[in-house]
Amino acid sequence: ETGVTQTPRHLVMGMTNKKSLKCEQHLGHNAMYWYKQSAKKPLELMFVYSLEERVENNSVPSRFSPECPNSSHLFLHLHTLQPEDSALYLCASSQVGGRSGELFFGEGSRLTVL
Amino acid sequence: RKEVEQDPGPFNVPEGATVAFNCTYSNSASQSFFWYRQDCRKEPKLLMSVYSSGNEDGRFTAQLNRASQYISLLIRDSKLSDSATYLCVVSRNNAGNMLTFGGGTRLMVKP
Image (cartoon, rainbow over all chains, first blue to last red; front, side):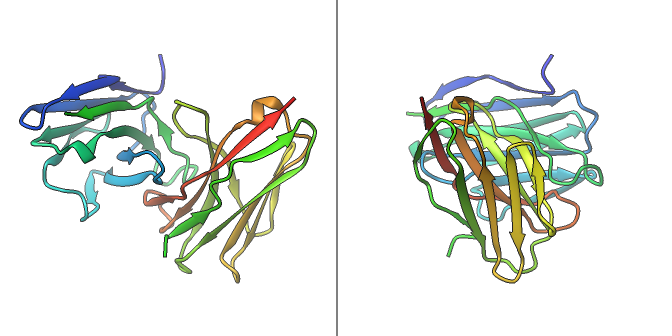
């Protein structure tokens, strides 16, 4: 079983749909993240849940809504997306206070918005 | 100016060559520094941390110059399996939960 699992691996949705991405970490970490990776752009940090506190990037549109019900699960709720939101969405986890900076990523959810 | 800048490459080198990548960062208050590796269509994975005194892990050597806000990665005796994108990563805090990634430098090692 891999440390960080993401579902679905691929998602195609229309602009009016509502969908969710799911992430689960089996590493006992205390922080979870959503990153966006678009072609020819650096990974962009979207949201962080760290030590039970949510930290968000203010440039993330409200059509993306994270949810972290516990330290092992993280969701990204998607609503009324735009074609430019098509990208690879990577979930990661880490142990804050441990080996600082080592993020463990899932394999990603590739999203296509039509 | 981008927070973390890297030459995107690609760097095409023969097997056995030595290759170096550079990275600059704009936030002088940055606390921690790392190199991650991302294979094609895979997730990024930590390659090594970068310490102020410089550090080595086998064929890989990382250097940090805080005064110039510059980080480097040297790969000696390149292998075909080193072909990947190398991501320079900077942490804005000591907790290590606010990482900023560079765009990556692509390396292709040829037989």
